[in-house]
Image 1 (cartoon, rainbow, N blue to C red):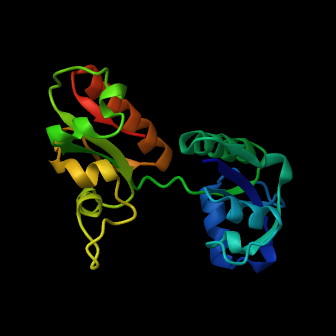
Image 2: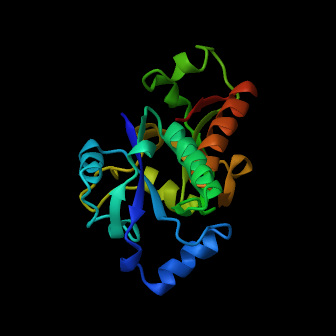
Image 3: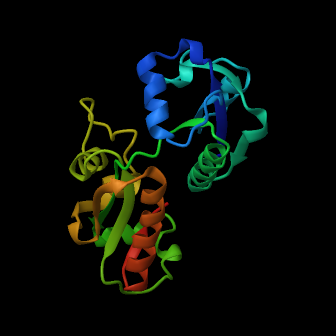
Length: 216
């Protein structure tokens, strides 16, 4: 599934004084007269096509004050972690040019590890990606979230009022999770990109320690 990244120049006349002040706070090296820009990425092609066409009205603030897309900075990547790395690099690049950049890099994300039943061995290619061994120290699902770890666990394991799995729940976690492995969680303090990178690190580390792990 492709991911799409845009740098959207804003109409500063439509920004409130408070919004302009927040831009300046986020960009202490911004140069007067340089554009106010929001960096946004999308996973849906239809939404990306809408933004590329200059339709910004239903985007979250302040992107809904968009004037135009900076075409030279539009890109497409195959994975979420690639698009987030590109967004980080683009934000840094524009800031060095004095732009006032709004880039969602707040440190509100966590990494969690869930203990899985041994029956997880039967899930799709779980054994294959873990070396097809006969024995493991344990079984873990690793993920990242901007909710609390407890809330994310409930989404994975709970049911809707209709008795169905939540759409945001991973099938393997819903079927096999039995608890939170707190010893291998990172509770807050990460950007979205940092949490994805740490998710991979935790998953690979536990795998090297003899666990069978499943992560993006």
